[in-house]
Length: 246
Image 1 (tube, helix red, strand yellow):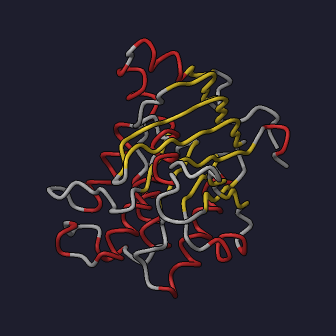
Image 2: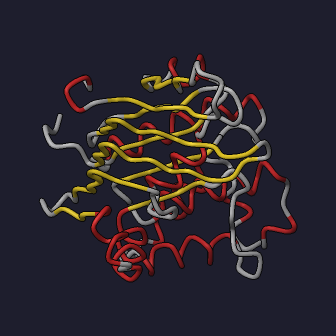
């Protein structure tokens, strides 16, 4: 197990408007090492998707004491400083190479076939590996659909394709928002097993959001539950300090 976290956040906050007013997500300390798999859990509206957007470098923190992404090569990207400087090019490049993100609604480009969606992820991430695309598709049961466009597929098939796309370029941070919500229950275990297997084989880190913590735990994914505010405000917190990680 690596001693340095692949992702490290300290004193990070993200505030945004919600249906009933203002919502605040607080991250006092959150660390994930390569080889680890963590599931964010909690009721709807507790900031699981907001947390994933922060980790994906897709959502700007309202404030950040420390926010670092460490690469396999031993370098570090100071995400907090990049946001402060408005360096969107660095954030975009870091996300393209180092992060794979499975959105809750899939997020596939509708004008490309599944194969083209995956090849695009590889090209942007600086990797070309057609055999990997075929293998991921086979494992997820969509190998016969690679030359079809997303609109011709079921919701579950699109979700599996989105998972394959997120893994296609071998990212070191894999994020997935409810990756099993749209797939048949018989495939949910296959999806989770593949995510865990792939990130550990690639020396990567996995963070998912899920409403099914029991299933996640069966696959060796550590549960990190939202801590809800008790003072009547719309606020929640995720906490997983580096020293507490196994």
